[in-house]
Length: 320
Image 1 (cartoon, rainbow, N blue to C red):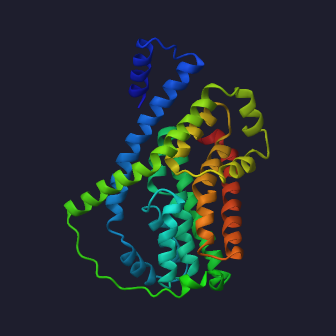
Image 2 (cartoon, rainbow, N blue to C red):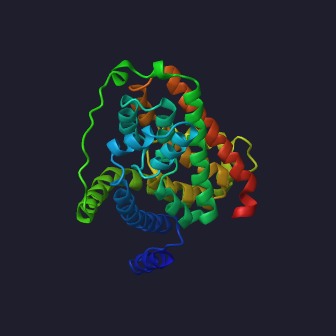
């Protein structure tokens, strides 16, 4: 969308702003990234929500219930890619699947992949890092989901799920056949609802990105988060945990960090940390599982995120 960036630059210049300066550059970054992300958000949510209309919770439970072993973890991870875009949105579905009696490891594969490797991340990452990085990011996210869910399933931690969830009786509700117009109405409703919820986080993310892009000296970013700092990936993953955002809110920050010299592994670790292990989502998940299982979940995700970060740092010269 370089045409949009040029158009905004022309308009701001006509208004008397110096877009090469800090203030003008920050305003240009903020306006361009906000418009770009909101356009992508609308298109992606429309497409993903239409696909999601074919996988309501009851149908998903039946589908997963027919598969056993690692195949069920793979299907659960893939289904996670067509669910809402943040971890907090995925937890109610995780609770529903768990209370319906699905294997715990399978439900965790879904919970990990839903925020970490959704379809939207492919398109958004392609727009900044290229298709190789986007596909690798999603593939590795799915791998973490499958391995993590399988490991949790092997540990037999069913007793670590809160009692009220294990005792919920699932109701079998007939699914009426939806027509194209019904699915489109549902998709448009999801666009409006999701846009309303995520817009504040997008604006906050773009604001942070604008500050990083135009006000923080490049040498500071390179020193803390560049490839020469062996702890950069760990710092980035930890920094993402207190935040709450989805892939749309992290993109402008990631874009600014990369432009300032942060390594690719650091940027992607930060994005994974924010979308998968945000503090609000961990608080919600604690109401569903006991501390021991929550700790195992966080440890698996953190370890996977850090390994992914160092992997991308290692291959960065060959894919960018």
